[in-house]
Amino acid sequence: LKENALALLKQVGEGQELQDLRVKYLGKKGELTEILRGMGGLSAEERPKIGQLVNEVRQVIEEAILSKQQEFEARVLEAKLNKQTIDVTLPGRPVPTGTMHPLSRIIEELEDIFIGLGYEVAEGPEVELDHFNFEMLNLPKGHPARDMQDSFYITEELLLRTHTSPVQARTMLKKEGKTPLKIICPGKVYRRDDDDATHSHQFTQIEGLVVGKDISMSDLKGTLLTFAKQMFGEDQQIRLRPSFFPFTEPSVEVDIQCVICHGEGCRICKQTGWIEILGAGMVHPRVLEMAGYNPQEVSGFAFGMGVERIAMLKYGIEDIRNFYTNDVRFLRQFNRS
Ligand code: FA5
Image (cartoon, rainbow, N blue to C red; front, side):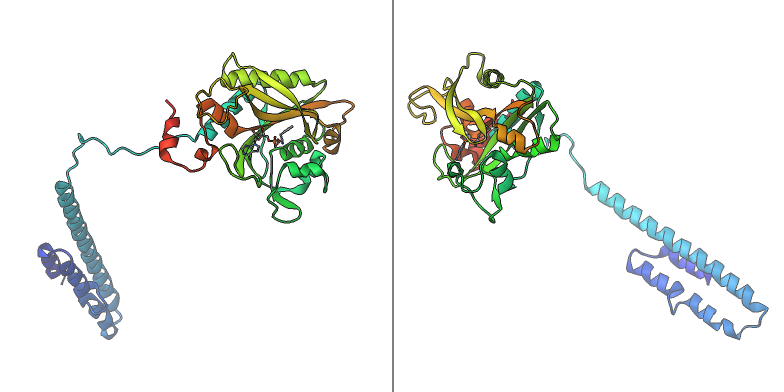
């Protein structure tokens, strides 16, 4: 039986033929199985001998089938490899790559500038508690100045943050009264403003906060001037105008010169030659107190700037909506060289 099987295996063809042979010898109704089944009729002496013999034969046949199968597989693979030739001299297919979004670029540049001045980058949630967005910033419920920022409320206590200023309170609480504290926080903010060329219902701000001993208005002014020069060039000047925010006292609005934007069609740079880019001021004593700092011992300044405004000035972009419509012709212009 063994000789017979091995002889047949030598000439067997691929696929089904090999499969049939396996069934013929090793299958449930195969010849070897038949012999095993007939062992009941054998004497006690013969049984182990025959059993061992059958097992030996089964092993030999199994191995022979396996090696035949491997031989066939190797042959198939070789045929395939011979057929598929690769021309390694052909040029590769170009992989289309995106470009960095101009707002991300400005945020990175701003982070580099402020990290260079010793600041850390903080983060806060976009879905914010009324408590942090307003109350901790000296804007209790019913305060008229809440109207300055028309809000998207989710529940009575929860809203889409209207500015990055709640991160001021969150960071101060985390720091537990320790100084110095120097952070910036970039992020998305939301307001029920009507969309036009310079306003969007969702835009980007960067908050800055410094708390420490003897921090003064001149530190704020120096910091903002340093930032403006690094962002827009050494000749850049800034202008501080008195303003009002409930969380800073005194408060200012800061303008920069529109030296970048020329031409008649330039809507963002108004006739005056100055454009507002941020709000700022000395952190209100109440705000310091609520967040666990003693206003008798420490002081601080804070600012919040609109990233879109800065990007528009820097790149001469005339419509804020360009940032959000994802027109690749617009975005490709900001390819990093
Ligand atoms: C604030 O949001 C204050 N939290 C800023 C601040 C922080 C003051 C810390 C003091 C201390 P304001 O509402 O002015 O302020 O917004 C700040 C900047 O965001 C503006 O100067 C402007 O550049 C930008 N901005 C405001 N509204 C929009 C809008 N709808 N679309 C695009 N940019 C906007």
